[in-house]
Each structure stands twice: as structure tokens, then as C-alpha cells.
Amino acid sequence: MMGPDELVQISHVARRFYLENASQVAIADELGISRFKVARLLEKAVKDGVVTITIQSPPSIDLDLSIGLRNAFGLSRALAVPTPNEDPAVVQDQLGSVAAQLLEEIAFEGAVLGFTAGRTLNATTLHLTRLPYCEVVALGGVAGPVKEHGVEVIRRVGEVTGGPTFPIFAPLFVASAPVANALRVDRGIAQAYAKFPRVDIGMVAVGSWAPPDSQLYDAASEAGIAEQLLDQGVVGEVGATLFTADGTTIDTIDDRSIAITGEQLRQIPEVIAVAGGRAKTRAIRAALNTGMVNSLVTDASTAQRLLESST
Image (cartoon, rainbow, N blue to C red):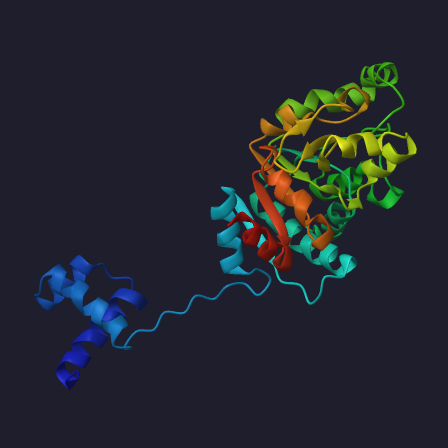
């Protein structure tokens, strides 16, 4: 049991070190003891409960799952967001809120920001309040309802940054390669394409094909080629780049797509996938194996499923 004199000494050392930011060397000089003795006293202070250390994780982030995802998949950043349920609208809104906070944290003056389309990225733009001056480029053409497609996403981000925007006023997926080639040389679209190699931070959605939860899947179905692609093992997409469960990319529709390529995505320093929900778990897992994504914002339930599948 600790005596009163020892308690006073340990408390004094702990106060100087933890509250007053004195170095161990300075404390040793003040008390006329070795710095090794100071280190032992600090260790004993924690061990015997004189000092307690509490780590306050932000309530919007599950720290253990976030660290687990980062380690399991070799990610630069991973944020697992607790949600009250797995209702898609709730998940999209809460992921959008955290993704917006992350972008506000890491965006820097003069950066080029790139965005695909999607409901979760639409939610992200609704939560943005401040960004430095940046250029903003669409990473693909138009897909889905007006409020969710890339043009509207780009417009909203541009309003927050105050910088120039480079939308793509063309479909994400077109009828033939000649049509795609003709569109790519259009002046406005060519300007967006010219920005692809300069993107510093990309924010992308993940579409699921099995089960289907993807605007690109819907377009492929209308074109009568979705079943052929599913037979090739496609489970999801990022932008217009398709991939199988093991992360292998499929180039079948690349010549008919108006979007950044998978190889160009791999060259972007930071590509953040913002995606969640039970239906997208398989596609998210596959996307993390493609090399196109190096950071992830997802919901805690999906994070748990991803970790269970990685063991």
C-alpha cells in the first residue's frame, strides 16, 4: 500500500508531467532524482490509479471499427459511423455528414477535388459548410435523378469552394464506342478529362451489381448487357469501372463510358469511398481490393461485416 509521502511525491510528479507539461528531465532536476525514477513514478501513478487516462472518441465515429478497417484493408483513412438503424436514407445522411467533415478537414487551398455521382455523395454535399478555394471536377457523366447526378454534386461543391467547376454534361454510359469518342472531344468534356491527372482528392460512390443497387447497372440493363456482365463476375463499380469480387477490373464497357478510368483513379493520392448498407457490403469489399480506393467512410454495421469477411 502506498504511504502518504510516496503518494504526495507521485501526485506531484504526475501533476507536473500531465497537467503542467514539464519534461521528465526537468522534474528529475527539480526533485533531485534520476529521470528513470521519474518514469517509474509515472508508471506507478497509472498502475495504482493516482492517474487515470480517458480517451474520448467522437460519438460520430466507432474508433475500434475504424482502426480495424484501416489495419485489415491497408487503408490510409477509415471512418466507421454508428447509425441508429440500416435504413438507406439514414445511412446515406449520416455517412454524408462525416464525409463532409473529413473533406473539410483534409482539403487544401488550390486542390483539385473530384466527385462521382450517387445518393451518398449528394448527401455529403448537403452537409458541406466550408472549404478552401479548390477546383472541382466531375469524374464521370450523368447518371440517375437530377439531384443525385454528378453535375448537381459538382455545382454544390463549387458553391462552397468558390472555385471553378468542370462538370460533364453527357451520360455516364452511351450506346457505342464511336458515340463516346465523339463526346470526349467536346470542349467542355475535354476540359474535365484534362483535370483527371491533376485530381488531389477523389470522393467516390460504390455501386453494387449483386444485388443490384447502381445507376450504372440500371443503364446496362436498359442496354441489354447487364446479364452478360454479371456472367463475367461483375459485383460492383466505382465511377464506370467494373470489378469482380476479388477486385479484378473488367474493361467490357470502358469504350462506351464517359468517366475517369480505373488506372487514373489509382494515380490519385487520396480516393475516399463513401458507401454503406447491407446490400453494398460485397461491392465495398471488392472495391477495397481494386487498388482504386485507399480510404473509406462507411457505417458501423457494414464495417463489422467487412471485418468478419477479412478474417
